Length: 225
Image 1 (cartoon, rainbow, N blue to C red):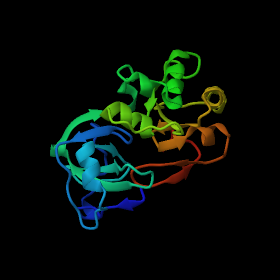
Image 2 (cartoon, rainbow, N blue to C red):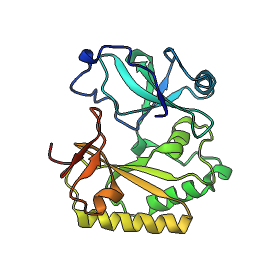
Image 3 (cartoon, rainbow, N blue to C red):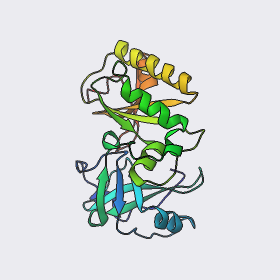
Image 4 (cartoon, rainbow, N blue to C red):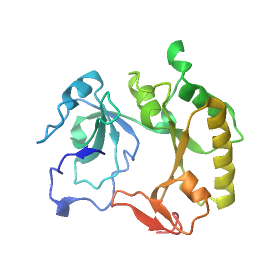
């Protein structure tokens, strides 16, 4: 996040266990948005246009959730906080459906690539996965967000061990889809240790960066904490 509001609670009040009702990259629809000091000027207009936010990785106190807002411009990103009582709905990446896209939107390279991946059962197979980033936000909100030059960001739920060989196989196939659509596809594995870039894990590095609510850390095995 480029800008982030100060937490509205003491650090000692943060919970050790994250509320399982929502996870990083889920999109939430809010009935209202808390206001904090030094809020960017674009935030209220963006929220009025689309009262949605993305769940971000940060420890929170009881009844609070860390969220991120998107503005119209690429550099308009704001990390802030929402009260649990203000959350009206939750949309997980794997539950997002592109069948209701208008025909003019469905022809954008990222949506064409997304549909190709869904048809290709040899790539992600039976894995639980879905789009995040601009594509996920558009599918959840119905507001045009992706562009002709957008990347396709993916989240792959990976609670159990994934071998480096299988990770490399998936990465190669994603790269082939990306080349065919002339876009960039960036996949993240959601592991017990946090979010791990598929490309980094597939490279066979001795340790990879795992992004967790408690902060990023280098780990040798994202499935052993």
